[in-house]
Image (cartoon, rainbow, N blue to C red):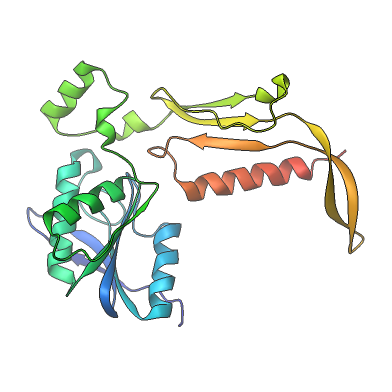
Length: 247
């Protein structure tokens, strides 16, 4: 295993759409990674999965939907139905034998529809934070009519959301995960009650039992706006800054 990524190639499944893809040769079933909304094939999850496929000698296919990543086309022209058709075309052109679709967020929605459309090809299916058809929630009837008429969802409609801090600890709550109920809310940071706890810290190269003020923090996200990898990275950095803050 050398950790080298497969080279980027291009495929045209029709209508002039030039799709970028990476294909790792190996044994069947072929792992098919399907990115989330406005994501691409070179994200952290896709790369980690490619490393797994390489270590096991398993074939893997990943690609960028039209208008995303290194594929041609305009993102604004993309639709769920169109991206599903692209996934079907890529499976038909670049896989032999059974496949295991692995979809992240919106990609899991596409994976489910792949299983419906080509059940004989799909040996198993994996959903990572699987999303529903998110054009169905958080919109007025007028918004839905416009989306049905125009056949698209604008990137701006799932970006620019607000970030809220919920200090539920003031009421004595230790741990809570606030729920996002309204569209436009990108994330909610929950901060629990600050209280003294016994912790183990390294002091002078040795483990020491100390008493420190501690609090639980949670981060609830709208997965259409931000993915789990970004969330974990942000929350880890946030905690790191707080714990290293000068006394």
